[in-house]
Image (cartoon, rainbow over all chains, first blue to last red; front, side):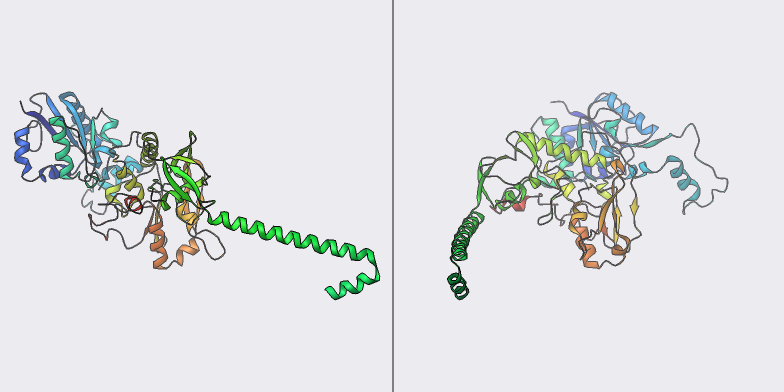
Length: 182
Length: 276
């Protein structure tokens, strides 16, 4: 059997979900037997070099770059999985959703207590920089997402069981302890 | 009494007859009343038979379906209900089906021979839908919530292994009220179940909490004077009564480690199933 190809990314996330993937401990050796990684921070491949079977998305969409990457993943992956609270509902970055963007930027670059020497009152406004969205969006509100694995981060057991079930085609039966939102 | 009757009776025959008749009637009345009371007492102590998913159950007369189910060791999921407090039927999670109609178990009294459907695929789906709707209607950031792990809304989502709500997130604008010394009111997390309004009353029966505003702006508010004079114990009681993290005791949060909180390892309602 040829190995399944997996791609991963972290959008508006903290890389905690990727850390949780590494938390499968010695099973990572089995994982390497099962899959080959393509675009992912794990192997540092920056762009897709082939079509992938599974894409793991960490984090929601808070700027135009996140949306672009997410759409690339949808194009290049057969199955997309939202991993973690941020990908599923925006997570902690989405706590800004009730605050107008203008106020957020004002606080971050002008008025915040940690703003030191921005005496020229410069706001990030360069074509090279991604534009901030009006609010943080869950991934499934931007593209079609096939599966969701909740948790902050999702338990290593949940990630492992879900991936193995998906790759082997077995039914996924999750114990109570592994589905958690924090 | 009898002496008076005899004296007056001798004077005139007419009142005598009337008196005797009256006396006889009252004795009869008393007998009937006593008999009725006995019957009533008997029926009060006799429990009503009804079934939940085909399982024979017994209920007190006048008891609601939800309490009766819990007494019989059957778990019907609920969010707004508090035992001993007047029911509101506001969360709709305890929906059951009786004679083809869905109704909230907490507000429906048990009737003899009632056949209640509880754990059916249809009702599980209906309840999950309601839970999903509650998640998208508020701002439920579980990872940053002090109540996470002890939250009943979250526990119900775990119970049904909710992976993602099927509805778009509303991200409504809600206000946090932190000017009380003991209680933090975070309306982002409130599910408007009225538990706090119904549970906490002062010596005159006036609620600590009330609904203010209307429609989609509806929110809970607390009496400022009562809030200013809360004891630590009462504040803790209020926090424990709130099914979600909308009412938080100040200067407390995150004191239980992940893994030892109420619903970390034990599903909500699992203690009720073991009662049987």
